[in-house]
Image (cartoon, rainbow, N blue to C red; front, side, top):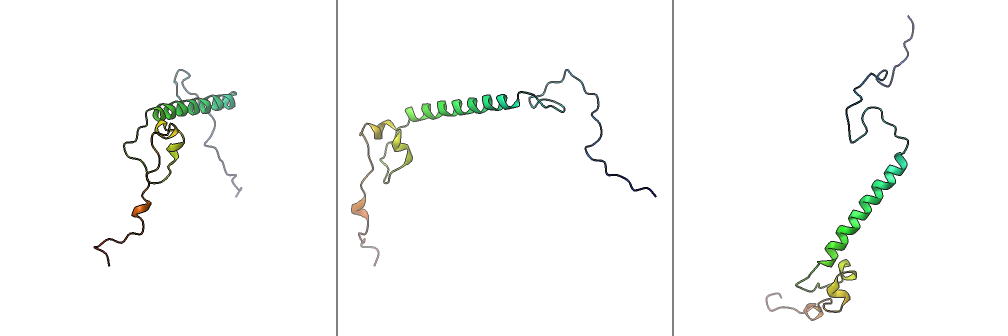
Length: 101
């Protein structure tokens, strides 16, 4: 009995229709420009994220001041212009109420 060699890879590449388009690249794709395509895609995502962030930050509006510092205080117009700050609630800390003994 002859030992059999394991076969991996699923066989040879079979003929496939060339006119089929796929956003992932189709069958057995190895594009030569994958690095530059990845950079373009990454920069596009970063640019769109920045645009949405900027749009949101320009329209951010708080009706009640926060009780502690929050990250959006660094870019929100109300905080950078001095119109609003952190609400002081230190007078509420440590004061016992009549209901609790």
